[in-house]
Image (cartoon, rainbow over all chains, first blue to last red; front, side, top):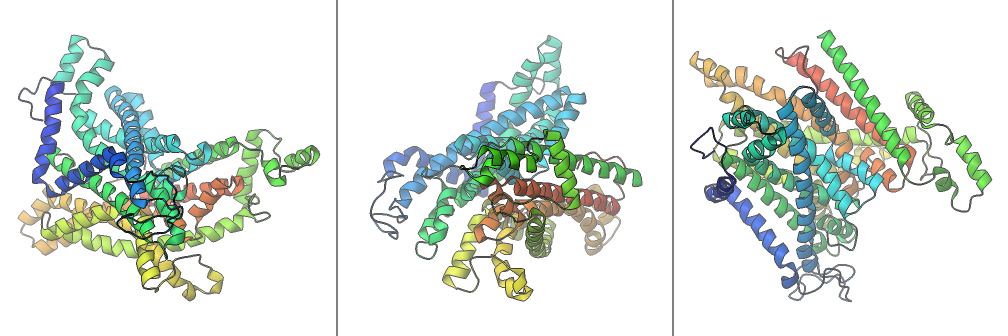
Length: 291
Length: 319
């Protein structure tokens, strides 16, 4: 914390400023900076997607299985769709899935973890047990099971990944809250007679945002990882939506004749997950977490 | 020790029972009439009724649950709906054995490499080797295993033609002839976990090296070699036992992506196919197996940990 008066909670503006200062301090961390650049690159790509792609992501043509060329930089698939266009458009699918799922997990996990640590006692016991049980199974297995019941689809994938994130974020939020909840500004708010909800939302939450930010980056990376895996298994986003995992799954029958169908989406997934993991590592260093 | 083991055993059994209830309830709640699915859409109402009676679908749900559980204990898990007439029990056993082979193979790759790299990197935090390991392992955990798998297939099957791309193993043809089919899935499966475990061991080493008792041992005048082998390694490697065990549990049910990539006949792909085909008996049995294996491995690890680490005894909550 950069705050000079430790018994006052820093204002929201100071929070935003310190958030930006972390990003600026990433300059000195090669790994974290590389991660930031990769993620910014993908953000730019997904915003500009309709302007930089020469075709529509689901446009068919008669040029099937054309290798990479000037006209089709990443080649075309079995329907003659432009792979470059689909990889670029896939970044929007990836971002919207991963951001929504991460957000869902943050809301759920922070609510559970923060209130568990704040109230303590039997509430902490029950919530802690619940998170332990949820966390003791492989995320992919829970996802398979739930998607088997709900059926595949974009919304269901977001829900499933959000549920898988919740206990992990909950644990982090809980331990961060435990470190903050006995500090003077929380005490002061209590003496002022503020409600529990106000103290949790306005006093504690802003002070665990650092930790939650690092955790969000890690969960974002894992969301991309999971949604790609679910797409690959056919349980995620359904065709013809441009989705990287799905594209790789469809490419498998043509590895001999058209390896570019697998290579470019694979590079996209790998670079985005790697970027987010690098960024998380860098943020952890500059915020002084993880020690 | 005995009291702790007993308590922990009870906890494991309760977890398995709760999991079995959830699996059964959710599977039963799946839309679709089982009798209709077996007989097809042209079945007459009488034959549907007769089949429902035979499958006991008209009984209350708790009776069916206990029937199912009792059957599971006898080894009778019913017959598959999608592969007509195939008994679920032997099918599950075959698949479980295949999954175990894959998991064991991955462990043989992962454990020595991750220990070696993790220890060397952890001994000199911040050195070029440590940084190299840090970047490499971050890379490993960033690549989903189907990507690693496809890269391996592209190189070793498509380009070089050394190893088969499909790993539909058949042990009846003899063990030795199946080994080439195992190599690529084992490597693909090892990637992510190799990254995680190496990072874990490295972090654990760094923490122990900075601890007071390591300082004390050094100040006592012991040589670096003695301090590291006698004090640091012991304390740093103990937590790795838990991480490896959790990953072993994960390997038994979470290997679905690798199994799908290589067409490997393991238990996770059995569950995946059963979910996709609404094959409820197979799905229930497969999930129950995975959950039981997972909880059993965790239970075994906790006991092993208590044996190895005299500091932890009796009242340690949870897993």
